[in-house]
Amino acid sequence: MLRKAFMLPEPPVTPAASDPVALLARLVALDSVNPDLVPGGAGESAIADFCGEWLAGRGFEVHRVEERPGRPSVVGVARGTGGGRSLMLNGHLDTVGLAGYDGDPLDPRVHDGRMFGRGTFDMKGGVAAMMVAAARATASGSLRGDVIVACVADEEHASFGTEEVLKSFTADAAIVTEPSHLELTLAHKGFAWFDVEIEGRAAHGSRPELGIDAIVKAGHFLVALEDLGRRLAQGPGHPLLGNGTVHASVIRGGEEASTYPAYCRVTLERRTVPGESADSVERELIGVLDRLTDTVADFRYRLIRGLYREPFEADPQSLIVRTLSRHAEKALGRPPVIRGEAFWTDCALLDRAGIPCLLIGVDGAGAHAATEYVDLASLHRLTGILADTVADFCA
Image (cartoon, rainbow, N blue to C red; front, side, top):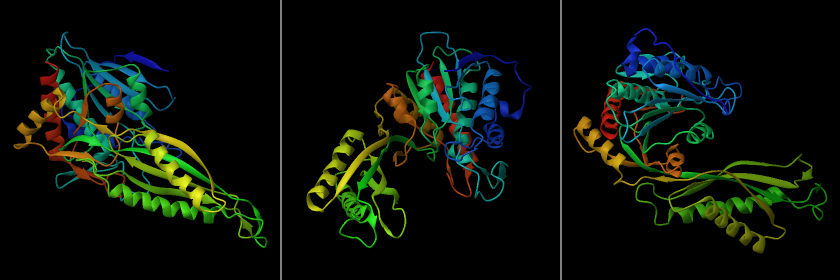
């Protein structure tokens, strides 16, 4: 693993030094497409270099974590005077692809109180807010606790960036700044990927007595999978997240029109809620598949577990939740909305590492879409909420 600390001369003072809008424009202009999603994507090197220089120029001790060459995460640490609580702000630098975007995705365009461009909403707006907030809160040098700014790689694919950071850094609490419309996200779903290989027997298309059609057998499994989805939807559900779901994502099988297919592979995704795990999902699927083995002639299968990410649920009475809620209410003029989120975030990794956390981010729209924007008023509000929370929690 590459992990190094460096300090750079302070760059000339620019508007981006204290303005999250100016900083966001700089971040959007840097191509950081995740190459695991788009082969040949630029990756995080250029944007990590920029963030490292920006943080170093504001007195942060900067570390570069790069177990995978060309896929760095940057961690800025403002050391406290001692005896205070530490807080990590976490946001990802990578984006989805640029193809199909309406206009120039790397040209941050401001119109009618919004900034447009790839990553403005998901989630360079949150990264800009947390960087400026951390710089504001630590500028006086009077905080007792450490403030840690983690600008991580690869959240859009497998989240190895946060996993790498957590090998070397921890904190008393954390805030993830994924977009949330200035609402507090205290829970989100997890997911489990599985492959089901249905076994058939190859034979010439004219010899049905010799062949077993794996694709036809897979059809029985797809019907059973749909039935499983209906049963999940009828369960009691989580108060913020509702029910788990399941769907078939990819199906592959067959060689040519004149041959009985010897195998068919179905890739599926099971979205999980707190209380469900990869093991419980695997048992659930085995139950479905074993029933088919018992009732469908010549049905044979192999179940292969893929990537699993656990669901997340915060303790609403934890200190970081109560502190952030108080400052959000002050900024918004009302208690913040509490929500659960269907998509997965790095909160689950932080929580698994024993770091109490929650999520709050900007307002806007267009994550992964042809047009993406952030509401700039929400960007300023988020920056203020984060700065006040850091100053309070780490005092």
